[in-house]
Image (cartoon, rainbow, N blue to C red; front, side):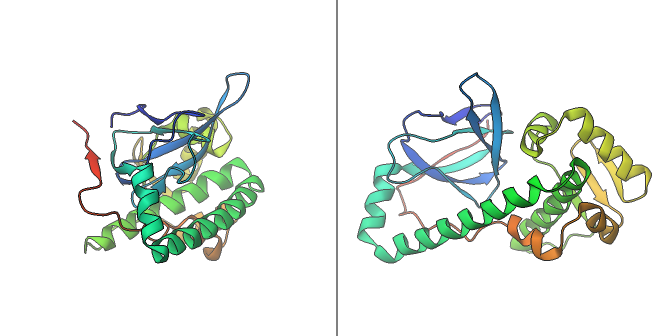
Length: 227
């Protein structure tokens, strides 16, 4: 999927569900006056779409060039009906994600913009380390790799591109991070960044990648890869 390509449209037909293999998706809500708000980010290993619902409540778009694995919604629903244990697993996962999403919303809503940026960097460090550990690699540096544009990040964190840039350079000048390029930042002092964020290590667990989605039958999925 190319960056900015719409996968599922807001209020459009929800024809399939899937998971992210590489890249990132943004979950967007369009307001009645045409304004758009990024309400969620979906990273590798995470599920997207809505089983048992004919239309989508949000727009799912590729935030960057991405690879996804999808299956037709009705095929997936049939799988769940045939395997109650998988349906039960999905229900538990959904309830856990809903509870975590509510807590994340409350957490981010109580932070100022600098704290939100610091929290995002900490989350991206943890996600990168988690992904490397899955493939048996040990990270030598704490690097926050932002997989989305500054515009999307500003919408997600409820601020502006200029404010994010100002906060990133503030953290750099104070020796907390090192700017590698526009989307990669080495964390030089993890404890100070955690202090700036205003969150605890337990709070950061709310942003961890969820457990793997229920398995899909072989042959029932197809992958869309970046050209």
